[in-house]
Amino acid sequence: MSQIIFELSKPGRKAYSLPELDVPDQRIEDLLPGNEIRKEPAQFPEVSELDVVRHFTRLSKKNYGVDDGFYPLGSCTMKYNPKVNEDVSRLPGFALSHPYQPEELSQGSMQIIYELDKYLSEISGMSRVSLQPAAGAHGELAGLMIIKKYHEELGEHRRNKVIVPDSAHGTNPATATVCGYETVEVKSNPRGGVDLEELKKAVGEDTAALMLTNPNTLGLFDENIEEIANIVHEAGGLLYYDGANMNPILGVVRPGDMGFDVIHYNLHKTFSTPHGGGGPGAGPVGVRDFLVPYLPKPMIEYNEEEDRYYMDYDLPKSIGKVKSYYGNFGVAIKAYSYIRALGAEGIKSVAEHAVLNANYLMRELAEAYHLPFDQTCMHEFIITPKPFKDKGVRTIDIAKRLLDYGYHPPTIYFPLIIEEAMMFEPTETESKETLDSFIEAMKQIAKECVEKPEIVINAPHETEIKRLDEVTAARKPDLRWQG
Ligand SMILES: *Cc1c(COP(=O)(O)O)cnc(C)c1O
Image 1 (cartoon, rainbow, N blue to C red):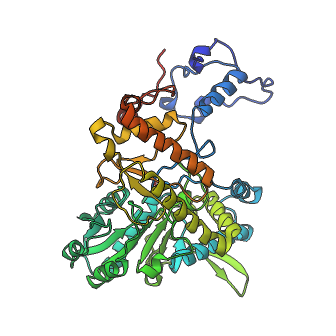
Image 2 (cartoon, rainbow, N blue to C red):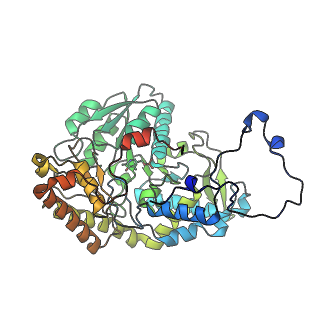
Image 3 (cartoon, rainbow, N blue to C red):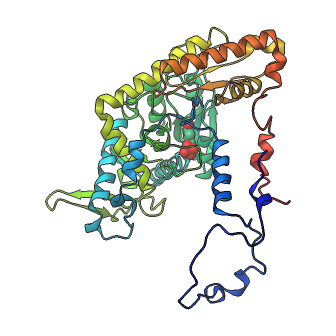
């Protein structure tokens, strides 16, 4: 095992050499109030440049990402994001522009935001889109704030409930709660969709909105979507579309046409920003025409006569600002570049291949595992290790065994309504050869589950670290080195 960087420390060793200062030194005491200054210097490791480079390079090799291999994490769309879009977002004209630059000097950047609003609106069937929210959950919050303000303007103060299906992503009820709503859960029917009778019982004069993911987290498209929309609208509620996973519907079907009023997108899932490392991302919020006045401000508009883009702050009904400046602009550029490069045909083929890949993988894996919903899936699907229950093999064991085969595991134990769920999303960017190799690994593991289950139950065997206490690692991370 290589030494960690603190153990390499030698007093006085440095990773830089600078010439003597030939200007007056800025004293820290002149810059910060006394109580803000450390009494003793921080105990950083004292190492050479080479030590630092090797340390971080070594750490980077312990990581696993889409650029290393297949990453079928359901609901996360860990697809390959073309590097050219990264290059475009780093063009100096974009990357070095300042948000306080005058409008005359920001026309190109403003045009990108304005046109991306148009493209995203066209893709979802909405009227306008704000790029301000920084993540999916943030887009949800902006969307519900819009819905809340709309009802309040109509004097409908009693609408204090948001309906969420039991298959929903955890951010949906969390957002409703943060926004001051009470969450009402509706059950799924045997085909994985919203149970219409349950929904009819749940809606009423107190309904503010239904939050729905369609296709849902089971990877299934709700066939009753038009009826669902009617039930909610007739009760005076609005329909919120969780568009985090747009891959399977791009260019094929639009939330606006399904009857939705508000939507958020995850640019860091669908539109070419890598994610999983903590950001930055973007969760634009889109709305139907009657909700446009409530969008976050400013909106970017185009004056045709003067051929000039400008910021419109004169939006009295707006929910206000939800993010500094105009959101994570670099993410918007990647989405813009991605959409422009694909064009209308390319956008549609993303959806077609995402759905084709998922169904191919699902059918192959169903030969060895249990398939709770034997229906055509969209971008993702669920299988379970039910056939190996009597051998004592659980989902966590299969996920860990996949690490030995060099794959990132699928999403596990979600959605909560399926016992021992394993949720796979292959995405459109994987080749048939990659999928076939993965299928072979999964079938091999299934065989092990029957013939020598202890190998699976005690996995992983090949990784540097075995089974972590992941909950404690996340809740109480021990980030200090104490020698
Ligand atoms: C990822 C996801 C979200 C939340 O997006 P964040 O950017 O992580 O906040 C919401 N809903 C669904 C269905 C998702 O997959």
